[in-house]
Length: 585
Image (cartoon, rainbow, N blue to C red; front, top):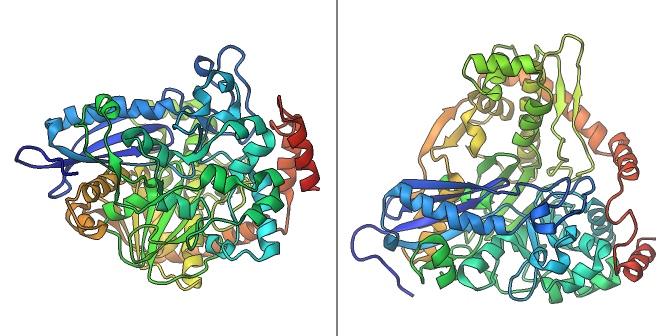
């Protein structure tokens, strides 16, 4: 289908769905210039304590620990508000837009009926937590992930090394198994277990197409197939047909059109009906083309609430603790590698909210600074190691290289002289040490990192960027665009609309030029090398089974605050719960 404006320039829309908001950007096809943007904050944000009364009704269910849910209509509202706002901000005619593409957090899962209606929007399931979207950082499926990993290792499943030897609790099989075992009635009512990245595309064009990126990285889809029915049945007999009944669907190649904008979605967005809608994608992976990082060895770190590290390679290598390696997972013709850290900006935000006394906030206000800027200013004056601290960046668990969300944060070296700026800097450094651990794992496995490129909101902190350059020993460049994922989505929209033959060509024409560049300072590199050895000592002591205190604390916490599955079966769950106990034993 060829839909173009009458003469003049053509434009595309990229929509980036983050953890707390969605951002839409209008981009010129010819050169990638960003002309306008719009942002919409999710009204329900992240549900971690209770379901919202406006959707679940009075007496909305409380949530156990490690849960993170969302409301799917918040995603539709991004289309209704952010897209028209971006068009208005750009000052263009909507008729000049030829394509739209979206990216999403992964693995954010939506249980839906056959037509795409989320179960949480059905009255009979509105007060059932398992009917809601499970956000990427929902970590309550760790027991299921542990069983998947143990069984896969025992059986010698060939797909396990493609994920660094461990499947995360964040991924769709662990979350799907948790759903079955804790609320089999909701599981039975669910016709499709859908990535939000694909669900929003379904809403736009009326077609459900699984994108190759999340299918490969989060859905254990390797060499054209998922884990076998025999494997799934060994986990739980009721899970045997999970793939065939709930998951399997047409896989869409990145940059292809999944379909064309429906009349309903055109009304939401103000865009022309019939324009191309690109196959869904992940926020991190679309950012690589936006940064013009589509060649082997160019590592892109998308730094926000969490960090995702993506890179292309020429061959297949097994990297311990990586999130996955997928043929064509970023661009066709190369192996796409992914690793990540579950908490980065989230950790800094948690500390400034709960660990900084009022007088620091007041001092920041007097200087016209935010508390992050104020702490950064104070911490910048310190010599490396002056605070006497070392921290582990596991406040949201460890995604790479340990793949264990039962781990937790640590700060060692605190005394009565320790001040907030000391801890803040130690946390900044801890996340950089975590990235260094990932870079080393790639290098040691035959996938060398040649360039280090940073995108995302945290690139605006120059102290943090210099710390990362010094700790990794790599020259660090930042992406010039402040909307890397949205620009990357727009690049995919241009390819889906037929404006460019492939992602590489579109990235060359539309990708962002570098922003600030940070070069490692030799004295700093040497100083951090000493601290990194201490980080690795703690990393291995707490993370590799030497001391299981973190796991024991999690077990104690669960006993004190039971999860849905621990508190006894929900309505209609008795038989299945008994079967689960037999299988687990």
